[in-house]
Image (cartoon, rainbow, N blue to C red):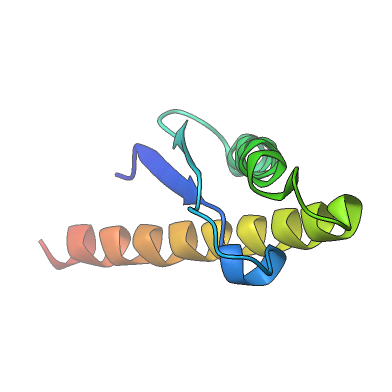
Length: 91
């Protein structure tokens, strides 16, 4: 079972100047899908705030970063969860 998801802002989506992507770990154990989505969105807002606060168009960059980061993280989680489930089914 996937217990933690590392959330990383995708700098290419939100930041024009080079920057180091920030990351936040989101614990997932024992949480429902709705709780996971809420936690991922919250973590994305935190990471993207750090990454976009020096941008000229902060709100635009922040909004794009949150959307892209949340989407990418939830897709990564869904893929990992599907692989985990197929591994368990194969046993």
